[in-house]
Length: 254
Image (tube, rainbow, N blue to C red):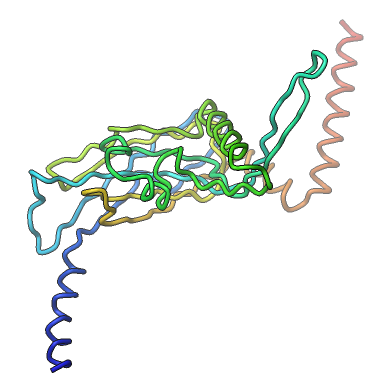
């Protein structure tokens, strides 16, 4: 009897698993090279939503799409300025262990209309849901203040931003969104995550990787500084002395 019941349940469980839609994402550029003339780039994220059994999407109950582009995590120290005797000095400070060096989120609707706070925190959907991992023993209030300061600083530099309504969905199957990569973007391995959401639940997720790296003379300088720091330092000092001597000679001549 138990075996027969188990055999009956297996197709039902398999059918429930297969009933979920699948995301097939892609990006317009998997490799972005930064040279001295780099002024930024536009990254296009696009793809398709495959429904089980080839069925058509429910036009009366459509799903939404959210795309998130993240740069490599880094440790950041935030310092708070305080005016003492008319002079601005560093006061309190805190360190965040895993702040993304770049974060951009685009969605078909505002995130607050798609998922609750708990789901946003789990998937880090939105700037106010980033898990920055503060390393100091500061109070929760201080951590929140420094986190807000970090997000504001990165936003003003163009490294953090949100674009609600920027994802276009065609016929409930095809989607596309454009994300601007600023000129001062850090290098490293980036991830482009896509989430399919309906009724406040994440139905499917997929990830693509993007490499942003320096090229040309900038890449040569970076590799020299990383792999042969002594020679790089000596050459930098020698060039500084040479340029200083040349500038002094020109000044005495004219």
